[in-house]
Length: 389
Image (cartoon, rainbow, N blue to C red; front, top):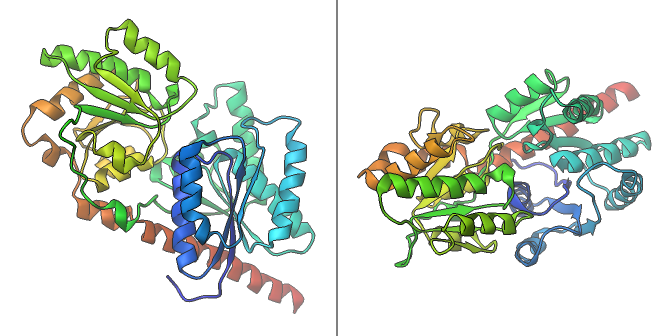
């Protein structure tokens, strides 16, 4: 990392689960090791035992501490109190950088940072959407409101960070051409994640790893699994790993289709444990930005079968045979069957580990983010000097 003055960096986001949490953890570790002081402010009502263990792992790197407070997912009148409490917490931490992640984290970080600016406190305000509000359609009333709010918040934003080309393009199409500083900085995984994970002796044919909610496509996975069995003419096996609000509905769906004994369900666990259960990882999402599960699977040497959504084609290759049409269980079933019936399919469909490491490395990501922090603060310092003179 570049040798510059140590910074006080605070990451603000709502829910400590999934890709946002993974992204922030990697930045925390990399920037702390580089000598910076880092803290987290997030929701206290989401996450479970698995997330608590992940927090315990990064506590040694959180010199500015971990602050958790209630944050509702949707905008409500109670947010007035949340914004005030957030402002007081942030003010007491005296950050140089406020980096909001996801829609709610972005609102809180930028509003609090702007309030600090009013009080002559110099702080850089950044926002990374991670998909979030960009999943909304401009054709709906709610989507119109959310996307217009994104546009309005540009006035309180020093830089927008996009985690893939797809996210940058979506922002331009749905919100408009950004009127503030922007950077494209790909998500990255740590060096430890570039280790091949062999499958266990009792491995299943496929695994699904992720949140159990319709946006991520577990229902499509179940439907495609049944169709892949019919294509191959034999019973298959799978495990769905994760937690979420629709877990019971997916369980009922499997039982109704007679798949209850061939698809099992397990709670969220370390991806290394999950990856040992199968060579084939299915990512049937309806919408994504740049999902970590795809990068982690590639780093572990897994065969990825995924929908052509978000930044996934940027990771697998835009012409990869592993990409399937979104919302298309027939296409997903076809590729799931190909992955286990065609010899050499993995080597033909997956990018090399070297290519993945050169683009999607946590150290590369953290360096680029840190450079942006310094660029913003240096620019503000020069402006302040110019005004004073």
